[in-house]
Image 1 (cartoon, one colour):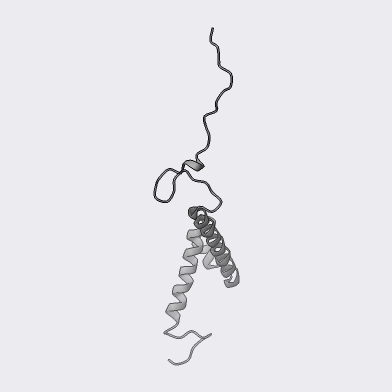
Image 2 (cartoon, rainbow, N blue to C red; image 1 turned 180 degrees about the vertical axis):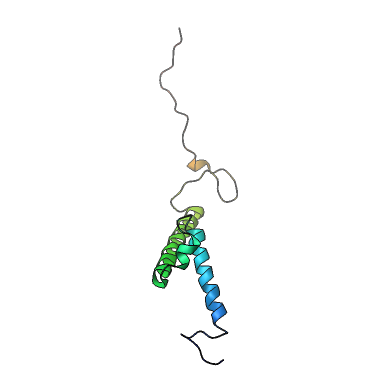
Length: 104
């Protein structure tokens, strides 16, 4: 059968179906309980694509923030990457009192 309906052939149909189910899975899994499979499957294609892209953008931004935090940008840590204590970043927790306490 050489004719195709809307561009799908016997070779491309399994790929398109796999892509559809992968997209549905990603939305349901990364939607954190906000979506179920039936709702996403019956959603219009344009809305499903929009939802998928918004979730994808959110996780990309979250990943960038986590990478920046792990690289140490704008942060002071007590340990460096080798595991040694960095004494310059140690907060001064001991406050010296100028007056002595007299317990009588």
